[in-house]
Length: 248
Image (cartoon, rainbow, N blue to C red; front, side, top):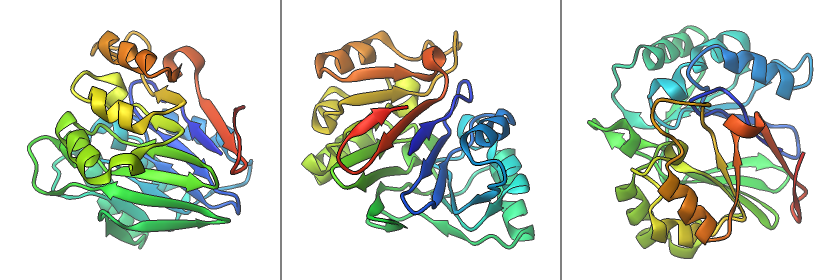
């Protein structure tokens, strides 16, 4: 089960693997992640196996310190970049206090979720970057015949790089539309390579950024991808049995 949680203008994605392991990718801009998790997880389930921070921007990392404060988290994975974002620093401090192991994401790493579900990290930023979006972790989850591509706020430069280095390996049934549908991401050739049946846009209603961009919506329509948006549908839940994919 992959739930694209409605956290307003931000990203938060909860993955529940066949054997019950859970990954939370990003935590949205603030505390409303807690209510969303309470709805998405069984009542007394206060455990998250892995927190993945795609990059240290507030609309992705803002809610993660709250999650770490409330849930028993087994590990954290994030890009190997320096950051002065106070939420990111709070996450690091709390991880130290709670003795939660933290690892730097590396391209080529495979996270085994059990039951045949595996997530591969295709790209992870490194060093000190002026544009944190460029450092976004890009990861692909595969379970049986179904696949999901998670992109954080990755940029056109990285998309071009991945199109060149990964090629058809990028093809996925579900695409988490990069950067909330910004025109600084979602390059046409990249979208044609991913060829998603379903594109999910995590975005806040009437946001000030003009996300999603109309050109991006047109490109997704051009590749005949169904578009689902959290500002229109709320939390979007997709379930796979390894063969078919259904929206719950």
